[in-house]
Length: 151
Image (spheres, rainbow, N blue to C red):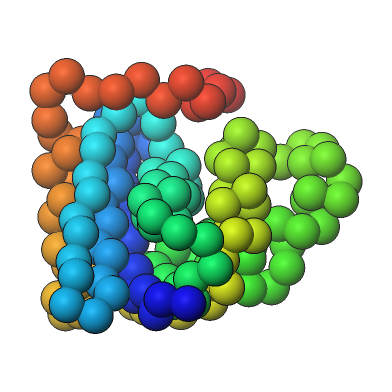
């Protein structure tokens, strides 16, 4: 079982607005950075999508993954068990159902632990993820967030 450290961040320029995410994966001497931008999305969707994309990038199942995120939305939803209650209730009335379903699918293939870190607190990897997320949100040829549902 590989030990993986993951840093994630997501942001949107307006909520909703253009958005992006950044992910840094570290395993021993290996490092991978992933980022993408979307035309219209929300901050919470980008924070959650960053975690999903990072977990989906792992080549094998059964990894021991520690995820550092400044998103209380994501960290609390998992660590406090809220998402599992939402799943039992078929996500009734919950936003981002598409991403939570996708998250749980990949989450269950690994042993995952979340650590909340304060954003913009001089954590180099988190700051890098923030720069990647914002840079991607400002990009051209942005992706379409197919699951985003305007209110």
